[in-house]
Image (cartoon, rainbow, N blue to C red):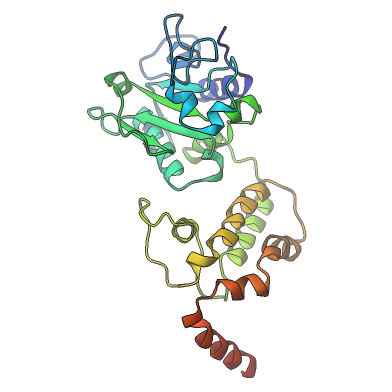
Amino acid sequence: MTRAPANLSAVRSLLLTHLNIDKNTVRDSDLEPAEVGIVGDPAHRGGYHCGSDRVVTNDYSVVESSRDRNGLTLDAAALDVGQFQVRSGGQTHDLRSFSTWCVAQCVANAADTRDIREIIYTPDGRTVRRWDRLARRTSGDNSHLWHTHFSFFRDSIKAGRDQTPLFRRYLTTIGLLEDDMTPEQDGRLKRIETMLSRLDGREPIGQTYLRLAVGKDDAVGAKPVSHPTLTSLGSQLSGVQQALATLAGRDFTDEPAIVQGVLASLTPEKIAAAIPPTMAKQVAEELARRLAA
């Protein structure tokens, strides 16, 4: 029968640990155990709350992505989170602010969101919206006015991949969980990010630019880029973001070596091949000017 996988059970436990404020009483403002679900009830058929024994013909949670087709097991691949309200850092945080924060991270393609297929939520308590990585749907039924639904690609559940980082990051952001990084590690990571964010010492290459570079220039919050070569270089530069995510929290000491390792794929040949012919003369003249300086 459909079962709750360990990696989603870990997310459930994490949220209840930090958002179920008074575990001895039932309070309207707390996130209660009954409000965080993984497996659908016995009558539930089809969708990410169901494993292979409960999916239906042409189930969207299976057929629309190879990640789901190849990852189908008896495990459910969804998490529902109910209403809560907590005070932290002088601010009130609730299901709506939590949901919109998570959606914003998905829109930005943060490394710890890439196993999330969809989030069905309400930003205002009146309208149901759906962020869908595959851009198939934009809304959901009215039950999502009081709970938020997360679907995960089934192959990530089958692989047992840790799904807590996004939710740990949320709890850290609102001040309910301490950052695991030491101040020294955090400082080093910021210096590495600064070094990697500049090709020539002047132009930033951040998440917004990389989204444009890989052809997603209609993304929310996207801005024009000033480097015409970014579109061609995008496929080579996009690995920088993933490398930074891998470095987070690691005990590293040789910063220049790390930077060199991340940028190793940006060979002169690849950079030259990416420069449009119309720019080649300008680039050559600029390089000559710098070398002569």
